[in-house]
Image 1 (cartoon, helix red, strand yellow):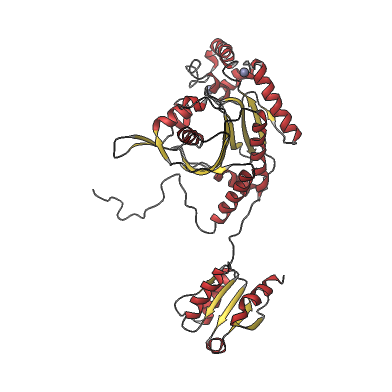
Image 2 (cartoon, helix red, strand yellow):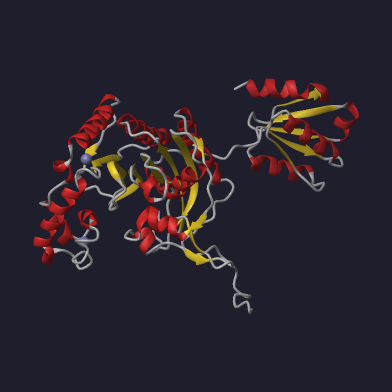
Length: 425
Ligand SMILES: [Zn+2]
Ligand SMILES: [Zn+2]
């Protein structure tokens, strides 16, 4: 095989990005916020393979959806199996639940890359990352409230404000078929007014039309019958209970009768959190109930609910609102050793074993050059070791932020002295 790129520098694929040390401190902090909120609500971390049998996503997300129908990364492996890179988070978790049959309720949180072949633009990547949760085995509306509260606490915990929680109920197998029949009838009567893409989608996926951003479709759906008016008594009770729970916790929401997820196994509570950053609404979190999904994927009927939230988009929103700025941690001490470096080697090991963040210079550089690096590292203290310190078994501690104040301490009291000095302002 010839390598046609031999003279061109290799770059990350279009639509992907590298996350580098420094910038990644913010990701670690974000994951920390999410993990601690999820874990106090009983969620445990789940990791599933990044690629799965393509049929999982075809069945579990649906070939009618953009993400599977048009944007999924599919490939045949060397064994001839049809595989796909994960386009979203839920299907794999449900597959793992069915495969390992844990005792319900099953609560899992994840942080994962997801892959979609779409046109790259701000906040959209071909490999982007999501955090999310799934709860399997609880039909109670109170768990919907817990999941929504977790979503809200997460965004609030990052410092975001002004986002909108849009909420709807999609009904269930009891009431939705009748509703879909009346929706098809209405759309059929207005077929000529729909956008070109949707003229022929009335039978296959009428709910998606309500979601269409085209002005023609919007005009038609304005007067379309809504699911909310057609909910059966059980679904109406469930939705009332969810809204009452949100009210009780003072979580604001906006009832959006047009909010849909266009597949049969999405049921009842459905939601999206959007934020207007001045260039239109950005969806930063989405989810809902999927009481029919476990069965569709071959498991026993089991209710489920969850959400996913794009990390890049959420951080873009944080940038615009100037919140959740996270500086990478700076070392407490930087060791400047002008002897042969053996003292630096041993001191680094000793202090790191004590749990301290310390760095050093390598390669017998001059004292001046080592101090320059120490300053650049952001370290609070320089620990200076020269010939005299080696002979006296001492260390000179210089406060790099305190105008260069320095003290000489005995080597065996270094740790105590360092902790005392660090505790001062
Ligand atoms: Zn349309
Ligand atoms: Zn119903």
